[in-house]
Amino acid sequence: MRVTSKGQVTIPRSVRQRLGIFPQSEVEFVVEGNTVILRTVTGETGRGKRVIETLRGRATVKMTTDEIMAFTRGED
Image (tube, rainbow, N blue to C red):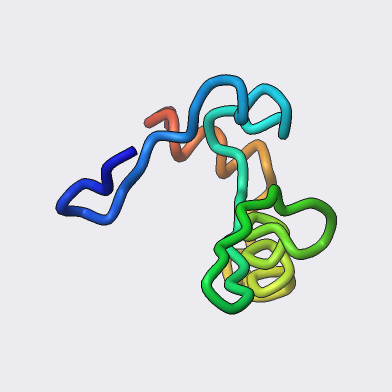
């Protein structure tokens, strides 16, 4: 398997299926000596959950959900 100029490799389908890696899955690389371990990220350590926790309680707009939805849809 070759590494691209961008540092990318393709994870073989059999490995993705075995690990349950789907598009948008979070994975991490763990380096132990000269070995790299690829594993899926689960639970609270996922990037999405970290982003949500970081942003929680920081909203400054005093709009209802309905007002926000109307605004984003361009409704008056």
